[in-house]
Amino acid sequence: MPETDFHYVYILQSASSRSRYYTGCTKDVQKRLDKHNSGQVPHTAKYPPWRVKTCIAFSDKRKAVAFERYLKSPSGRAFAKKRL
Image 1 (cartoon, rainbow, N blue to C red):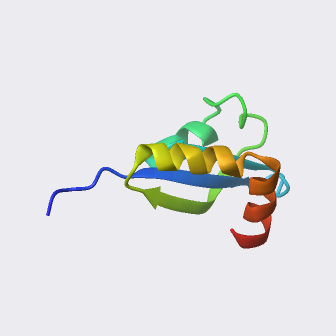
Image 2 (cartoon, helix red, strand yellow):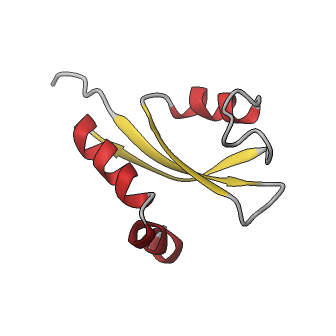
């Protein structure tokens, strides 16, 4: 069976300000989390440290990007708050 190249949609929660969340998409969650926690991502630099709250794997990059976009919409944020 060939190796699947997964793309991950993740939601981070700030440990310093528990009401702060960040949603993103990546192929390497740990590497991306390290960037967020080291201040290399402008949107998350003010509220480190971050922890992974939710991570969802997709085998199709287009579906991962579409789901990330949805989670950043008002209805997607409501869905994430209630279900994820």
